Image 1 (cartoon, one colour):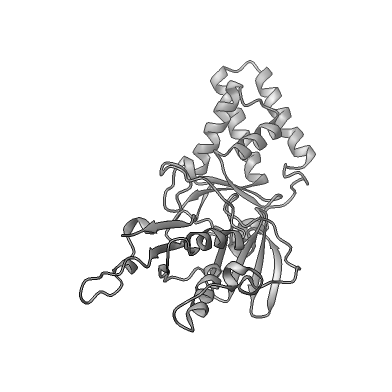
Image 2: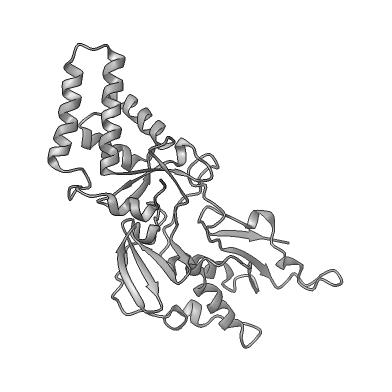
Length: 312
């Protein structure tokens, strides 16, 4: 029988305030580890018994997921049902958490066996497929904005509501979220309060309205993501505007990672593919008055990062 992510999240309970299982549960797994280590079983039997017990306790504390597209150890994740954090099982924060929870030093050989067992389980029958959300996500009738790693804001026609990460089956991956923000603060329009947006100039009278609509449509994750062309003289502020947009959206600044890391995400992610053109480019072939509006392959990015492509 298949269940939804929402049902999985709702079924998780009994986790302590620090994100660990209750004190008695922690004592149980630690006691089991100590008892097993002191037994007269062969070393490989001890490691297997401890690893099995850890996986069982871990599934009581949360849920294991594998990426629906990649299904590899690097992108496998664990959802902590108390902290409402969805993080990679190979991340420093997860490894630190599980080491503290089990009271097993990460330098210990036993920890290596536990880590391998967690990775194996993350791709097995006890795990579920997921396409983690990043920053914001839209569903029919709702828009979800992340608020730190553990909360989301659900926006509907009837208003907004602060919810836990995982509500309605929407799970944002840790590190791919907006910085925590006060949802009750009075909203301000950057096109009125920020000089960079307010004083943006356009050749057409409706140009600024198009820019505003393009900017505000990002959280809706539109299926069609038209490239944005900012044309102007060198030094007119094209690049500065591009750098200001992620700050306005409270996006975290993350370094570019290699293609072999879990920064890979599905094509459902939004992207800012901006084509920045100086007005000195005035020549164009017949029938193509603005050839620089054609997006280049490298302009499309699906890792949640802002991408700038220069054309000549």
